[in-house]
Image (cartoon, rainbow, N blue to C red; front, side, top):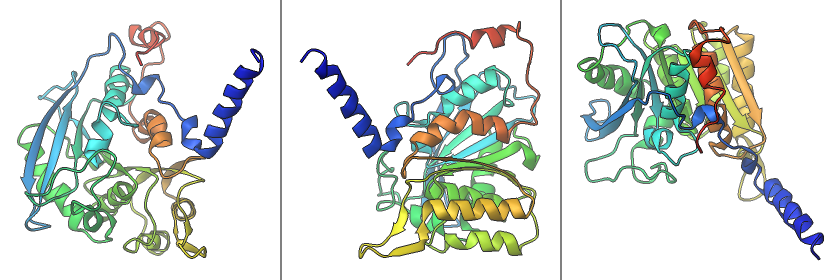
Length: 321
């Protein structure tokens, strides 16, 4: 029995991974806290009232890197569903990624903003695992194909940020991202306001027929090309459009619609990249991919290639779990 028991444990582990393919994905060192890497400060929460959605307000936090210099215009990266991107126990941990990549000079020094979906004053902030679809204005803001949420970001959030930070006015120095409905919202902001945001990061994007999001592939094909750079991530086991009666609806197939959008962007000559994994509707794979997605989105930034550089050497040391 002493020889059989480890085999049984291994078989159980394989079975668990087959049942939940997201177990294959574990955060890498660029997403973890590292010794010797200066830590940015997270300031907030701050609250701004919304004119685009009267009666609601948006809570946000600001990541200020240790290298921030108020005398220099600074890049900006915004994350929708902010609580899910900044929580220390979440699948993503964007603040750690920015600490590490800024320190290593693989992305520019940048302000990060983690903004939650709008809510009325009496509604609670969304919980990390619940996202807020039933308790906030998230479905209307994130899934609608109009310019209202772009107005929240450009006309309401940016002016508040500019009062405190020296942000670059160059749209090439501004990115926005999100997961699921937050991802399609990020795409919509850049699509509606390409003169303000030109970099889009999308995890398991809901480009499906929740509020017409499946139309984006056709919209992209029929519209004049916009100066956007887009990185899409999704899993082959994401929600695949099966109705409760067992029939198939391709407009509600997350993976199919992400692939359609990728193909449309590619055909129109967009600067687009993608990563298709085996995961379900989860941010596990996206969290693992975030460092590489950020490097690609901001790849115009000069980096050190000197193997003797002290920053390069520091990243050969093991990371903390």
